[in-house]
Image (tube, rainbow, N blue to C red):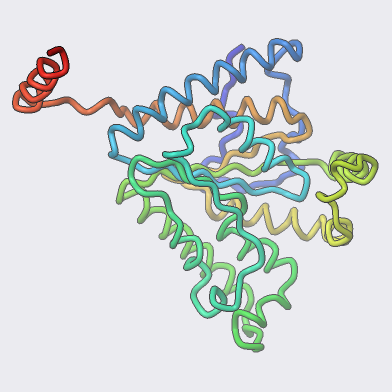
Amino acid sequence: MKIDSQAYCVPAGAKVRLRKWATIAQLAYKSKRQYRKLLESHVEQLSSLQDIHYAANRYALLLIFQGMDAAGKDGAIRHVMSGINPQGCEVTSFKSPSAAELEHDFLWRTTRVLPPRGYIGIFNRSYYEEVLIVRVHPKLLGAEFEGKQPQDSNKLWEGRYRSIVNFEQHLHRNGTRVVKFFLHLSKEEQRKRFLARIDDPQKNWKFSMADAKEREFWKDYMRAYEECLSATSTAVAPWYIVPADDKASARLIVSQVILETLGALGSSYPEIDAKKRRELQAARRRLMK
């Protein structure tokens, strides 16, 4: 079953209204068995493309995952990237910034862990937190500006959007391809997942009262996401709004986008010259003795 990945891509310059974007997609599979087969096929293809990507050593790929709590970021990363060679993949999760990180600009801590050429880097949350949670809770800016709140917050957010767009364009010019996923979860589905975490002893560790308190700011988060997605989806670093109420469909959409992105790089295994070919043949003759 063909997945139209562009149906989930935010066009550059588009004004995003999340209520117009579905939180549950038309199912990309007809049964659980078909879902498993499709995902397995995607994982196998990703494994092959990653091997070429690593060997070619031409580009880096940065995948960014954002979403509300329980949107399925961890699960999407775990299932979609299950066949990836860990040697060529780095996953980084970003929590509250440390005291040392607060002494630098808001892009510093993520810049330090960007993937090198040949690698796939995955950010579970990212520098986008600095225009999302910090915007919903502006008191957090006090820690970044030594207790002094900026007088014009609108200019602050607009400036950060510009910094992000310029940063991602700089990465693109220098060989890093950036793809961003917003896992679009409904408030009702989040409630169900929170209840499941509370009712299942093996999932209790995933839940905290802070998660429940953040639900009170749902509308504020949606407005922050709308402005962020509108301002920072570009041709070179697009946002994909992935319906996340059905985890299986979300994983298939994410894996399809990554497959297409890797395929579009046009990478291939390095070709060897005549000298290297002679060295290989000499080594083969020695090994055969």
